[in-house]
Image (cartoon, rainbow, N blue to C red; front, side, top):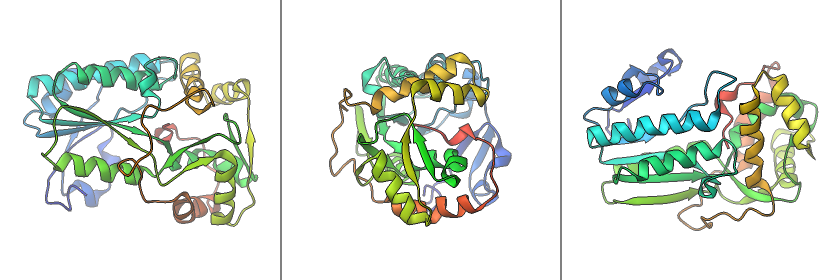
Length: 287
């Protein structure tokens, strides 16, 4: 969207080779590890605006909260040293808790670090990504959707593409200032059971929802090779999918985005279920 708007963005990429060549030719690509504070500051010099997205740590034994906090400090340094005018942070529903939300606590630290710069910053507190379902292909092929949440708990589900559109528009706009929060909630809140029904119809496969215990979740994460701190970080995120959690940011016109789960599932999940089974890819698993 930035390119189509006439902007030549600078992309900080851990693995530039994974970028679409059609995008790369219209952008300035700098191979950058966001954990390298000096490299981030150098790469963002002369930037007018910054979209900050924190990748998961590649070390399976890393503490995710400490990792995200460190990345947040690097972003804050770059904003301060380079006088970046506007920053948009990909945050999450639950960051307002500030503690007790597993990995999301690391995003909360980043929010606080960017706030402390006094610069103009927007925190996008996003709902549960549709694309998280792509990490459940094996169980979906078996007709089961397993997640550690009550079947009747309704939460916002959102297409990451819609998040990107909001980020692009806010990066291009110069008519805002100060510290702001905008939730990104997708078109509607959905229960776990409703999600199973939607994807059943969209993919032509009968899918039933099944709640798994915290112990079962931890066991599956350990089996995937994650260390104890990352296991606890991911398990802790379930605190925002329980009845006791009340989101600070209410659904409104500003937080509601258009793409439905049914449309996304038909376009992306349906063909993915037809491909050969693949191993888990944690790069896309974000709450």
